[in-house]
Image (cartoon, rainbow, N blue to C red):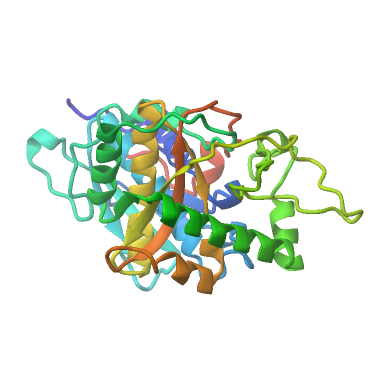
Length: 340
């Protein structure tokens, strides 16, 4: 496929694909710039939309940015270029998390820096626009071994590991998640930060209609974004529902725990989520225990191999659920214009 000419319309599509990535509380903590000299898209942190109390180290922000980088890789390949990815390319610019260059088409033999599997994007571009979290109950239908194998390979191709937790470990992971929920509900600053990102209007945050119900049985600790109100009642969430009795929880890990690993974990996460979407598999993210340093280390205790847990992913079959809003591509793009 011959690359298209980079014009304003294609640039808008590339940025729209990037901002369709998942982020904690739908903060969308990124901004983009086209460097006209290198014809590369810069992915930069937007710390003003970071989570000061929930994500003080910026790990979740980096994972979110990594997911946006993967969407850019898919979109760049869709339009016929070879995505040339570099993570943290300039130490003097700590907010510059990655660049995605528009290299020659794959048939021209171009190489990449941080993209070891440049031909692995088939069918994923359409999934970018359909992927979103489903916070609803799933059915009891199990994922086929072939699908799980492909999801595992998708993570591995991006420098991470993915494995399905066994029933005993699943119970332990959910207990840690429930403990994190209990702590957050008792922390006024984190609770207020979470409530602040539940918004009726605007392109950021989670609209009340997209909040999921809590599990009436108490087995599955879904995130309570609103917590108790001043009067002690829990208003705003849908009525409680019965969730699946045997949830499938996949554990996404990296061997190391540096900023580059967080960015790679985000790419692996989004590859897994897009591939799952293409197979009709729903997903929601259980991030709560990762937000407390001691609980995060406890998540890794039961792993068969050393590593650092970056995400717990609940997988299954069920309703698609409502989507959260996204900012306009023009609002996420700083300066610069399409190359001519």
